[in-house]
Length: 221
Ligand code: SF4
Image (cartoon, rainbow, N blue to C red; front, side, top):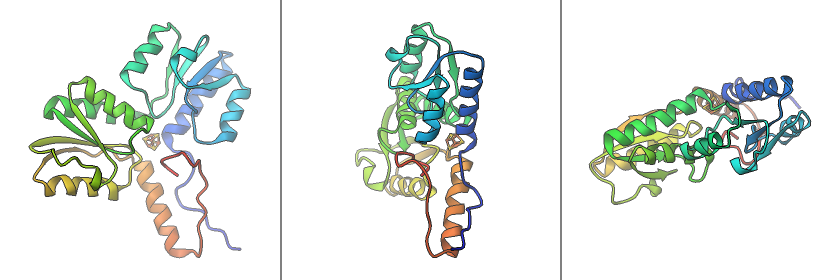
């Protein structure tokens, strides 16, 4: 078989950065836990565990060493819980995610109501929702046009999960605008995601079959 690799593939900048930060922590001899798996890749998670970096589900399970915040970021409440435990924090929140969190809070203050375009329940989306709520906003999550609440009207802030497809983002925006909603938009789709999506689409046009290698629970996959 002839095998062609996509032009853009592999761990993105934010995940690679988080991995490097975790490995630096391990090489300094510090024990550490990550809040959730650092990457959607069981082999890499197992290698980190061998180096003393375990994944835990919540801050209460962190009893010693550093707590690594992964690239998805955490809610402000979880950040406070970690700080209250008095353990050193290694904040590997991807700078693009941090920018989306700030945008969500700013839109909440400016518009009062915010739509987060993304996958309900995803840790990054939970963070965006929490930042917007903490800033006093009424928040809705919409993955597709059908998720847009009929009650929305007037001025609404719109922010998007970094790994969403442009199609989903535009579909939700169109649904809001069709209802006469005035949208104040922060386009926080990540360039790394866009490049990988476009690369996959380009390659799909050229080949007979495609294999996507990635974690089943990864939005990027
Ligand atoms: S925002 Fe982009 S670079 Fe950052 S972790 Fe997500 S996909 Fe990776």
